[in-house]
Image (cartoon, rainbow, N blue to C red; front, side, top):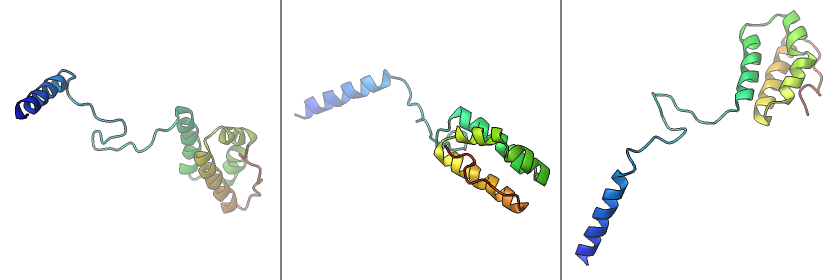
Amino acid sequence: MKIVSSLAFAAFLATTEAFGPAQPLKGAVQNGATSTMYVNIGDRKRRSAVCEILDANPTKEIVETQLLSDDMSEMVKKCNWKLRNSMIRKIRDQAARYEIPFDSSFGVK
């Protein structure tokens, strides 16, 4: 019985080397950084467009003309639900910062 199990183990060991070295799993730690979640490329571009405006400490005029525009509302509508909720919250907070009225239907499908 031991001969059969040792032969089976030897055969298994020989076949695993034929497939080459193990590859890291998608989402695993690579180069010291972890990728925790796959993000849609379109959502990533939309998020960066909004965050560029928000990170630049926008003035009241920029909030009124760019962040609260119909184009921005349409862009937020195209995002997935999690990104859409966070973008609406961030834009709403900027509008509240300058006491600009915020439409409750902004970015809502």
